Image (cartoon, rainbow, N blue to C red):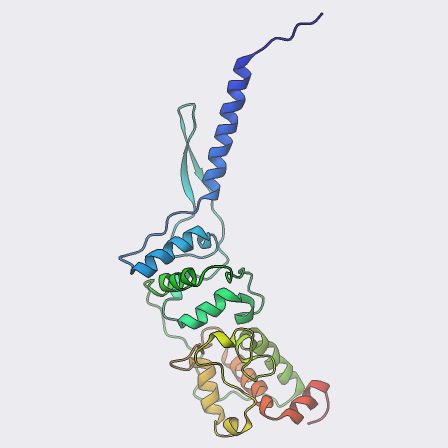
Amino acid sequence: MIRKTYRPELLVVLFLGLFAAGALVATYSQPPAVVTDAPTSAAQRGARVFQRERCLFCHSVRDAPAVSQRVIFPLGYVERVVWQWRRNGPDLNQMAGERTDDWLLAHFVQPGSIVAGCPMPSYAHLPDEDLHDLIAFIQQAQRPARAATSNVSNSIPIVPETRESYLAGRKIYEIYCAGCHGREGNGAGAVGHLLQPEPRDLTDAAWMRKRDDDYLLRIIAQGKPNTAMPGYATTLTVREQALVLYYLKFFADPSARQAMEEGLAR
């Protein structure tokens, strides 16, 4: 008969190993603290929401460093654990004042409608107070100085009046404009109802006839004050802006737009 030997030291080693593994997991799962300079109460609450939702794993704020934690193991020694990754979201230091509060709200609710293909998940499940506090936190960030943009033209680039130009303009419009103005240009985009004032109805032929190309191109490049319409001079080249201008004018001419869509001669 073989007698089994009971070795309690093995249980101790196993317990210590599990404890050490738990310490490592806790280190990797905890985002670094967010530091703000005298924020308002709403911004301070927003900083906590920002940390709780782990936004810092994709977005930089005030040049925050990569996660770097010290883990103390029960055996009495200290190990330095450094985990670095490439953030794929924009630097939020650059966002303060660049977008209106309602634009940011729409982006939190339906990111892909504001920028097509945006990998950011929706935060529509958060309470309204959390969303507004998060907006306050982003808006109070101190934006570093940067050079003025050069993608603003005093003249309209020549765009060939072809179906190729139409399709190129449509592609850009669907990425940057359709979420607010709608795919049909009628202002009924997926997040248009969240904006005040609501996006312009580009199918209004009477309004469009009163605006010349210089005016429309300036709005595309520099945005519209007191609205959620941002400027795209830092995002689109002058030619891309002209292609969007060429495309959106077809909204006010349904028959010409249908001909372009079907590949027929205008």
